[in-house]
Image (cartoon, rainbow, N blue to C red; front, side):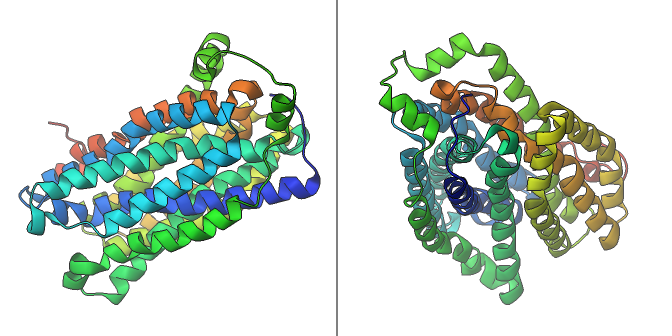
Amino acid sequence: MADVNGTPRDVRKAAVASLFGSALEWYDFFLYGTAAALVFNTLFFPTFDPLVGTIAAFGTNAVGFLARPLGGIVFGHFGDRVGRKSMLVTTLVIMGVATCLIGLLSTYGAIEAWAPMLLVSLRIVQGIAVGGEWGGGVLIVSEHAPSHRRGFYSAWSQTGVGLGFVLSASAYALAQAVTTKESSLAWGWRVPFVVGILLTAVGLLIRLRIMETPAFRERTSEQERSGPPLLDVIRTHPKSILIAFGARVAETGASYLFLTLSLSYAAEVGVGKGVVLTALVVGMLFESFAMPLFGALSDRIGRRPGYIGGAIAVIVWAYPFFAMFDSRNPVLISVALFVAVVIGHEAMIGTQPAFFTELFASRVAYGGLALGHELASMIVGGFSPIVATRCSPGRARPGRSRCS
């Protein structure tokens, strides 16, 4: 990518705007995953037994991932043509409205089959919005930052992802703490979704104040002409797309297995979901603010060594992770989640923004990021919780896995 830098003040403003904007947008997206694990099986799929209902709820969650490449392609095209800033504003508004509507949606008990159908439709809209968010949020910082500090500054955009999870999990933990089980199922689950529209308004004000990136402004002033960005990036950067895809597969599979599956798996082994939610919030909060350190480390040692190290850590930790869950010990479960999130996952996700953006020329960067990042999100992130729920050790007996 071109090394056309913004002023130090512009870099800081872009980092802050990307952080808060992405935190609010990912709050909306993760909120659905949390609700799918906790309440959607009861509210929208009550005719199934608990296991099948959970799989069905995760299935609606997967629909959002299936829609992400579509959002990435559409917003990637216009992001490379029209600009990064305008696409970030648009995705934020779409996500906020869709999330609020989920909170206002009638359940199966009121409108029967229409409830899950409308739920799936709104999840598709969420997926389209978040599919266009990630690439733009990363580029708005990376294209402002100097190359020798790009890892540090661009990692702040990923910090927003972690904070979004913390906000969503905290909202549900609070809702469960202040309501009875009956009240939570009746109306408590709706509150975090409806509140999302207020957070969207805050994020919108922040994003409207940022400048377009220097690299895009320079390209516009030179009136650079090329074919459709999507076709251009496939023709000129096929290897880069595959590298981004493979690297994202490693990170997203670990992420959604550890974050989403852990909630439903805790119930299978008889551990309170509050224990898992608390551990996840603490781990993700720590990860969020330490993430720029891994970005800064990648400025020194390179992007690939840091990323590969994180992937190895995740693989090594996978078996101890589930073994510690099977112990049913809240302390061991908290340690399992903390190590999984803070060490293995953080090393990859903190390095990812600078690593991926440097794979593509600026004229096709939005589209290239969309293809590599969102296709992997769709294939791995959407179906990992479903497969893992079907094959989880708790379905047989502790310590053994069964897929049937």
